[in-house]
Amino acid sequence: MTVRDRDGIVDAKRIVVKVGSSSISGENTGQIRPLVDALAAAYGRGVEVVLVSSGAIATGMPYLRLDERPDDLATQQAAASVGQNLLMVRYQDALDRFGIIAGQVLLTAGDLENATPRSNAQRAVDRLLALRIIPIVNENDTVATHEIRFGDNDRLAALVAELIGADLLVLLSDVDALYTRPPHLEGAERIAHVPVGDELAGIEIGSTGRAGVGTGGAETKVSAARIAAAAGVAVLITATPLVSDALNGAPIGTWFDPAPRRHTGHAEAALA
Picture (cartoon, rainbow, N blue to C red):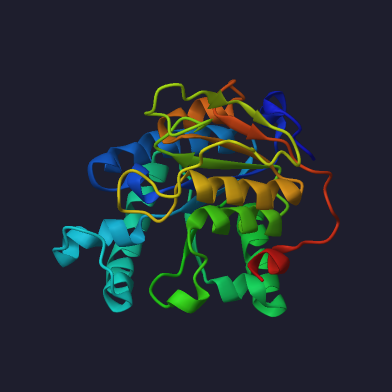
């Protein structure tokens, strides 16, 4: 089905939710449980839910005795290796309360750029959903190199939403919506609705997040929203604590209208 506005969210059959590192690591680790509560509620009404979760590197950093995100690739890979395991344990612990099982899916950009691994990824996620498993997707930071990285998980989430024909993509962060300028500045106004083709002319979009542990900001979310919307996937950008309201169609966040759905995917074009 095609979700055209917030009122249609409760009828969506397949939803991708993306959460950033700053929302579920460090002092915000406690947000994993309410996030899972919201996903489980949607799951309980029959929705097929995919979670795209950043946070492997940020979760692993304390265990490598790192105070800030490492700059070198090898240490990033080591932190991701440790953190991805811990992250999945935390998600599964939270899901156990609902009797829901999570499945781990790790992807690199090359997996969605080339036909065979792209088809394999699609088949695997489709099968997990059919088995009523919640796939938890992340970039495979342990083996990805700078040359083949997605760059941020907002883009990964958009490409996954396109790959599996999702009805809705929800991009979560520490800000409740897009604004006409950085929200801490005077005169910033919430952008509630972005029609198809709106270039957001004159809008000041920030390029980095606030917490310093992730790689995305408003700019990456707008870019990802455009990828997904162009593929016919509705997009909602809002804050992680508002995820339950978002999945129930509340008038919050920033809504991107979906373009008429195409019958062929273009994940490979978006990666080119």
